[in-house]
Amino acid sequence: MEVAGLYLAAGKSSRMGFSKLSAPLIPGFGIPLGSAALKELYRCGLEQIAVVVRPDDPLDWLAGAPERSPGREGGLDLWREGEPGEEEAHAARPPGNSRPWIVAPCKEADEGMSASLRCGLQALEAAGEPEAVMVLLADQPLVDADWLRELLRLYRNNPGLDYAASQSGPVLMPPVILSWNLCREAKVRLRGDRGAGALLSSGEFKGLALIQPEGAHLLMDVDSPGDLEQGRRYWSLRASGREL
Image (cartoon, rainbow, N blue to C red; front, side):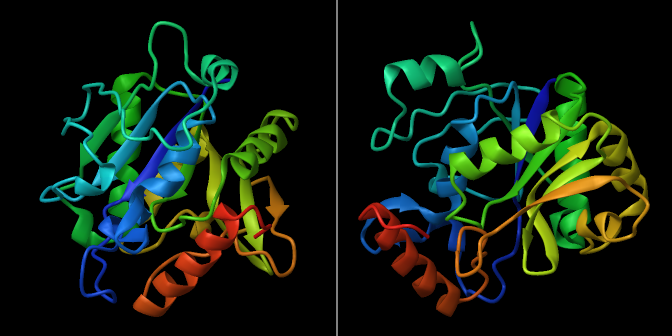
């Protein structure tokens, strides 16, 4: 089953006062916040990934990735530290097309999450309609490839699902895998800052959830300076080999 990746990185960072995607997870050094989860998404070996950004984004948080337009593919050579080993890399990269990439500037990004979602889905559709899409937010820097692979297994091992979502407490949230039929519904029905969660909670669609263990922090998102400092502490703990 072909599952594409959709990385939403077109938020305004209004509560931060600066571009949070460019903020290093280790001050003065290390991977930018915005590319942390993208690195983990890449390691899952999806056939195609679309990255939705604001039209004026300089893409500095992609650490050297070239700017691309929808429908064009580009490779990211930004991650030397933490690069997959030879065997893992071979498994993660589709034959003949290592690191396929679409950067999709979203002119309607100020309209909210739904506009970014539509923009990314349109870019993926133009590249070749997938069977399902894994949606991940750029401000979730602690999500790792193990979690994403487990979410993929949950979806693929249960045919007929409309979605497989992450869950923290009672809340369904990204990362989430949406069937292409549900993606079509999202494009038509979602407006403003309503994300796919509005459809998942409606009870109209069949899905399963991967539940974050109590006390874990993998699914935290960074929306404020306080969140950033907390995320940096958790990132340092993970770098030292401790569980999140």
